[in-house]
Amino acid sequence: MDLSEYARKIGISESKQVVRKAAELRRVSDLQFDSSGAGIGEICKSIICLEIAANMMQVIFDRQTAIRLSGMSEKAYIRSFNVMQNGIGIKNKLDIRELAIQFGCVRLIPLVQKGLSLYKERFIASLPPSRRASADFTRPVFTATGFYLCAKKHKLKVDKNKLIELSGTSEDEFSSVSTSMKDLCHDVFGVSKEKKDPKSVKVNRDLLDALPEKRQAEDGGYSSDEGKDLSAYKKRKLEENHKYEEWKSTVVESNKQSKDKVAVKKTKQAQLKFLKRDPGTEVGV
Image (tube, rainbow, N blue to C red; front, top):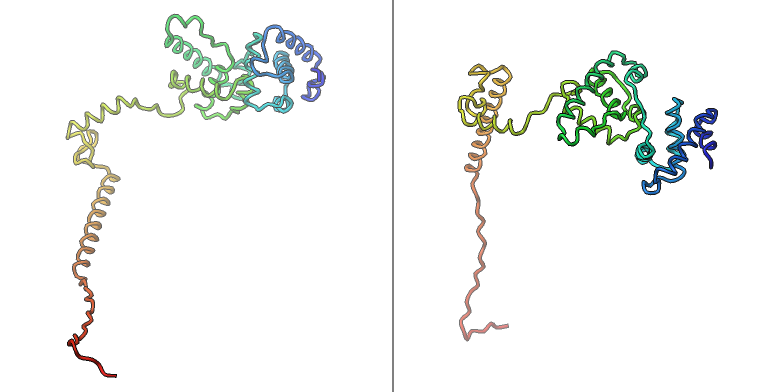
């Protein structure tokens, strides 16, 4: 089956330029990219060339139909698409303004730009000097992830799967970049309270244990910020615990007394006694 037939089934056969561009990309991939080594079959290679050409020509491409035609799972297709696109030197561009217009979040444009710039600075600063020059932030996955995190932080609904599709990345890579951005730029991309360092928590716990006046009320002392004036909630909890302990001790004492009052009756086994017969005596019949 040639490219034109695949294009017809996907619904882009009317765009002759896309088909011609896909044929050109197919020839380039045959020369520069080892598809067999990457586990990409000939059918999948042709369909991926069509999608790359459609993206370059800004033509709407039905990826779900393409995945069905390729005979691969969605994750396997996305992985193959990324490997092949990088293998032939094609970089998919993703513009923040276009995303903002498409998802109706125009006010996020400056926030995303600021966040991505800050992430780039902090990420490069965390690298050793020998690797800083090779850091590449031009891939669309960074733009898509930054846009998604900003939208989530400001409680704006965007389609995550659509962003993954537009960026041409996989869900695993998207999640990995998302984690990296939230770790380095929590002030811009974070959506939840920052977790405390376990080491600092342990040090604080040891300090509280060392100072009796800093212990919590349930440990026999009072916390530093409360003093002796406990909140109404904690007072109620302490009263409930005290009442429970009293009830528990009452039940235990009652059970003990009941056991003492019950008499333990011992059954005595009856014994059978037989008369001894004198030797020499016989019983007459």
